[in-house]
Image 1 (cartoon, rainbow, N blue to C red):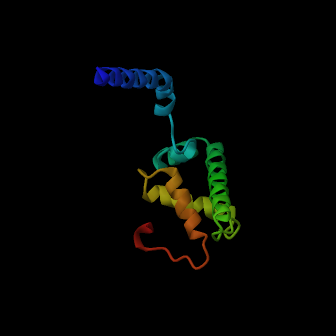
Image 2: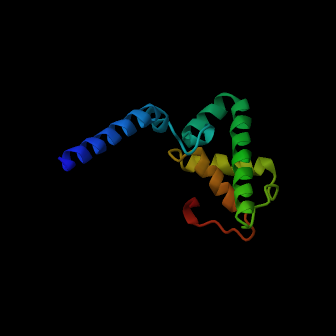
Image 3: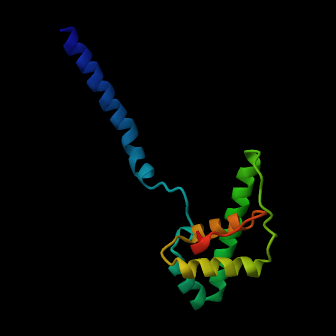
Length: 130
């Protein structure tokens, strides 16, 4: 009889947990580690910025925000940061455009990350842009 009572209590606890957490399932399924134009493919960036030059500004604004955020995380972890003015903005934009042209299936954020790495002092690119 004790086994039946314990099983009943366990079953009740499982059902109660299911009722509590079931409404959270849709919200949990809709989570993402990143959002915005950085999550778009490079090919989409190239297409959109060619069709509407204002899009180039939108994308690069996202890039600057991402690099600033990365620098802040580096500072918080007591790690070295990158001088985001180490290269003029038009050169940074050209870097991203060239990376995306060479890697159209890559995400735009990968091009931005590669730019960020290239701004580190002493950076020497590897063959193939990787």
